[in-house]
Length: 374
Ligand SMILES: C[S@@+](CC[C@H](N)C(=O)[O-])C[C@H]1O[C@@H](n2cnc3c(N)ncnc32)[C@H](O)[C@@H]1O
Image (cartoon, rainbow, N blue to C red; front, side):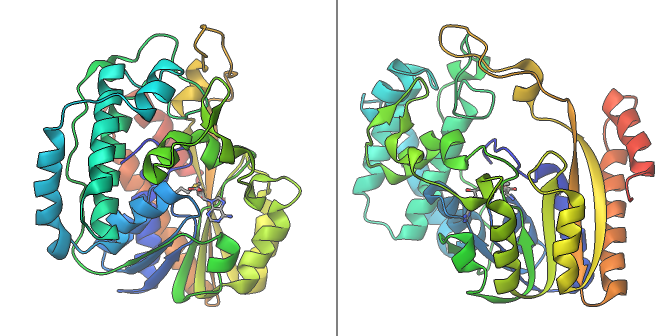
């Protein structure tokens, strides 16, 4: 799956264990689905997942990883991906905008992205199969990009992986049903009656449309006007979410909570976000007993090495190297919330114990695991 800020890659077992602890085959709403990693992990564990995100590329990832039934699509997608991998490059919008005007991909890969994306547009396939092909293309592009994981800037020197030839792979599509939607969270919150709602909103001002505009443009294939060094799609300027606004996030979060039709709620948030732990606990207390688990992590690589623009100028600051991910677990039944929190801690300890022996990460992690539940 793609590199994504705020992705819960390392928390999948912890979140999965919490959801499982409330019961089997739950109906779960993932309201801010991003890469759909969480939805995918929950579908694999036997839950029925309804994934939602307001961006086109994220909704396509959700169609692939949550909605598509592998029994229907796996073989057809594999055949088409083999064919698409044979296509020769032809320069087009991606080559011009993202390889010449900017440097996200080597031109030889940009030309292949252009040619493959054009071919996908001409195929007579339903929207789910198209979503799977686009997911495969975007993941292939992500493996050969030259960024630190966000598309606000690109590396001064080409990343080593950028020299690899672009190669599409079959995404891991799971058997069984699920749903993918592209609504604003405020509209989606009340639209589905579920057992559990998982909320993983943005934490701060960094908008996902700006950080991942290349994926949005490849998905929409609308050849937009681009601006600035990052060559962002012009629409990114007006695409706002209240969850990226310090002033609006609290009201938006309260409205989402008010609209949800869910028995249990799990919220992911970060200690560097706009809402404090105390504010979130106070908001959530209206909906049941709240258990909070705090998990300490290393920050994403861009924060550690800094970010450069084309002329080699550092445009990002080296920030703090660690942060805390909170999981707030809410249930009318305090024992059920406590069990879920205990399941999170067990899963997280197990993940950390499995880290390579003697590594520094393991030592640090073990120390943290002790005081993890506050
Ligand atoms: C922290 S990320 C979610 C990461 C995801 N859990 C994962 O593991 O990949 C937050 C997501 O919320 C989406 N988002 C932001 N504002 C939204 C809104 N108003 N309605 C729906 N989705 C929104 C963003 O597009 C982004 O994908």
